[in-house]
Length: 98
Image 1 (cartoon, one colour):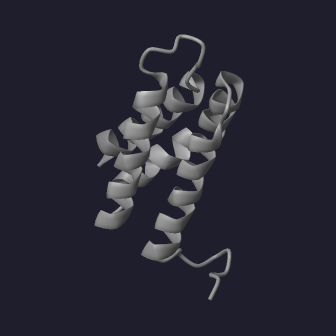
Image 2: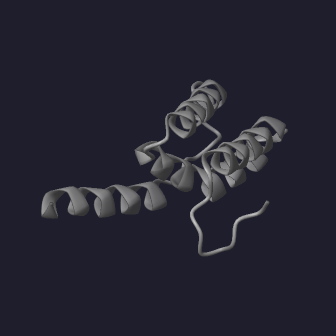
Image 3: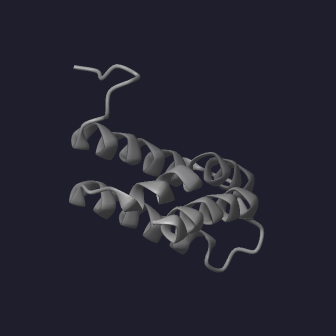
């Protein structure tokens, strides 16, 4: 059963979505394709690290390990630094205000 746009996805739906992203990253056959996929998906995946669901956090960590292996020695792939910095600033301000 698919969830409606306003409902919270189930743990299995989140894990499935992360599996699909991992597949897209693994299927990227060029640096440009990998970079494009990272720009599209990395910030959202990192946001899921704060999930209260253990399976989701584990899947995000699996995805990050894959990304690290792919880009570790590859200077041709740029991370979406502007989006990551913006996400960090938002998260930092939330923690500072609480």
